[in-house]
Image 1 (cartoon, rainbow, N blue to C red):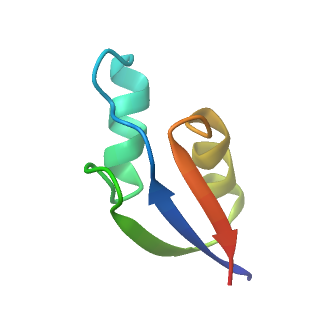
Image 2: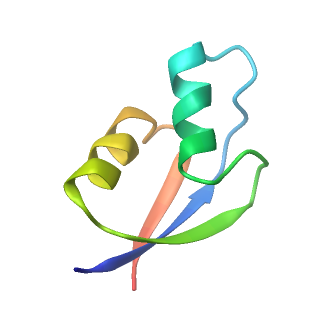
Length: 59
């Protein structure tokens, strides 16, 4: 599986609870925090739901 670096670029203030929980499930929560994840179909779906709040780079 490919690895991706996910960085939160925007705040979750005034976002839906679903988006906030998705950000937390990805291991994020603060602006400029980054996590490295395997690109599984589940992670890809989560990235798709909050793509306007994060930045994704392939490793």
